[in-house]
Each structure stands twice: as structure tokens, then as C-alpha cells.
Length: 143
Image 1 (cartoon, rainbow, N blue to C red):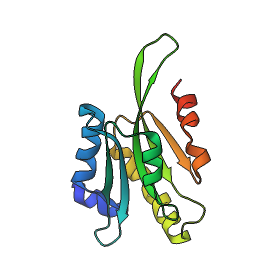
Image 2 (image 1 turned 60 degrees about the vertical axis):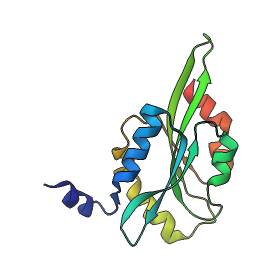
Image 3 (image 1 turned 30 degrees about the horizontal axis):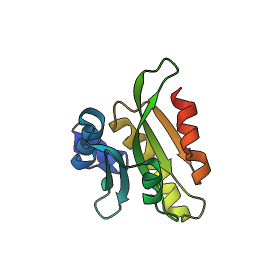
Image 4 (image 1 turned 120 degrees about the vertical axis):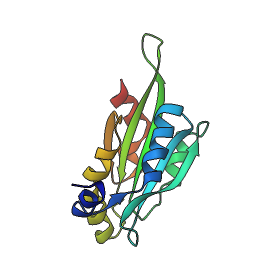
């Protein structure tokens, strides 16, 4: 079965740009984060925004819409108790309680297919408000 056919069967496809931008974050460390949205006309997940390597977690969270769903990946750098520099990639399914029910359903049904395309994600977080994806939540999961 062709890739295009399998994308069609699973609902939303994944743009080549979405995959290549994730690879840039993962391997080249070009981006601190990538925010993705579903383009309903194209029926695929596309890149909405990227954050430079020097951007903060606060800048990332401020980039997420208050009333709409998104997917995001965040490259979290931290230092272990043994004083080792580490990096973990988080996949975040952002679905605020104030977003439309149709959007929540669309993102929920497309999440597994999209998440499967992003090889190398270490942890996944489902967040409906900013407290569920607080920086301390990432720290706790990474350690």
C-alpha cells in the first residue's frame, strides 16, 4: 500500500515539511520547539511556527493559541543530578477546554497517526490548560 493511500485511510496526512522540521529539531538542534496545526483544506498536519534554539519555555507556551488545539514538540534541555547535560523531546497535544468540540475531536482522532510519524519523541503530554504542561511537569517527567 502506498504512503499516500495509508494517509488517506487514517484521516489527516502529515506534510513533508512537518517531518523535516521535526528532524531539524531532533538532529540539528535548529529549533527549540515546533508548533503544528491541522490544515483542514489540505487534510494534513502542517508547521504553524518554529522557535529558535535560544527561545525560552515561556515563549513557547505563549505561542500556543488560547482557544484552539495544536500539536507541539519541545526540545527540553536539563542537567541531571550527576551534572550531565541531557535533552529530551516532548510531544504535547494541546487541547484547551475553551476550544471548539469539533477541533478537540479532530485533533484527538489524528494524534496517534501524527505522533507515530515523529520517531525519537521521549515523552507525551496531553494538556488542556497551562498547568498540565508547566515547566515543572517536564522536569519531573525527564528525571
